[in-house]
Amino acid sequence: MISPADMVLFATVVREGSFTRAARQLGITKQTISERISKLEEQLGVRLLERTTRRLRVTGAGATYSDRCAAIAAQIDEANSEVQQQEAEPVGLLRVSSPMLYGRRYLAPVVAEFLGRYPKARVELVLADRRINLIEEGLDLAIHMGTLDDSSLVARKLGEGPVFFVASPGFLAKHGTPNARELQASRCIGFSAFETWRVEGLKVRIDPVLTVNDLEVACEAAIAGVGIACVPALLCRDAVRDGRLKVLFGPKPAMLRAAHVVYPSRLNLPTKVRLFVETLATRVAPMLPLHARARRRNS
Image (cartoon, rainbow, N blue to C red; front, top):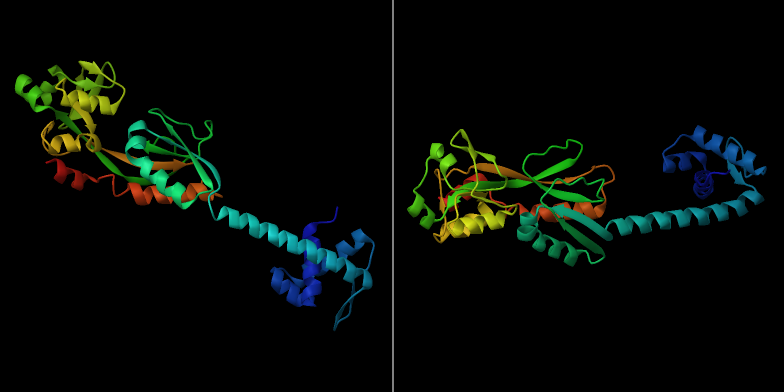
């Protein structure tokens, strides 16, 4: 079977009028061009070029064949340009996963900006508070909070979100403000039947009076006076500012939870993924407070 690449090569040789100029244009050696032209002539069973030490002449059959090859080369260039132009703008569906809280608080403006800028794109948000397998679930990228545990993924850090221990003034007036060692006996709001909190260098195992699977519910329960909760600054900041919640154990966060965007590979990264990640980093990083900024606001 004759290679289309050899047909394009032949059209280039005819257009340039010499092996030397064609070799320079294609970035290969004159010897390679000569060998490929000879092979093409052998496959066709037709003499395409008459070669001398001083000049190169196209045969009649070669001239006809060159016109056809030049047309094919032009179509190939057009096809390449067309697909590159399409890939320069995101097209089609982008599937994004995020924890529910992060998705509700941060992703709406990111998606709005992305879709407004790239109208040929579509976005599907999958909000779930669980570990996501990008490949198995057919996702393009995911927002991940906390420690990364899959080294096969490419990760870009967006920032760090501080987490605080909080309780309502009414709860503290009724039950007192505990120290770290007293926390185990306190009324707490947790996310499992038994869990361990790290407070002032101590590991404290709590038995929650209320167990929930949603951070916003935990924060609202703390505001209502149910108990002590451990929640992100983005949830409790307003309540701390207006006095509905108080930060316990000093202004230092209980922990800093890193936020990353992860995706399968940098190799041949689709334009829609690359541009969404760029939009995400630009919009989200300023909104995701760093440690020092959060401490000033919550102290």
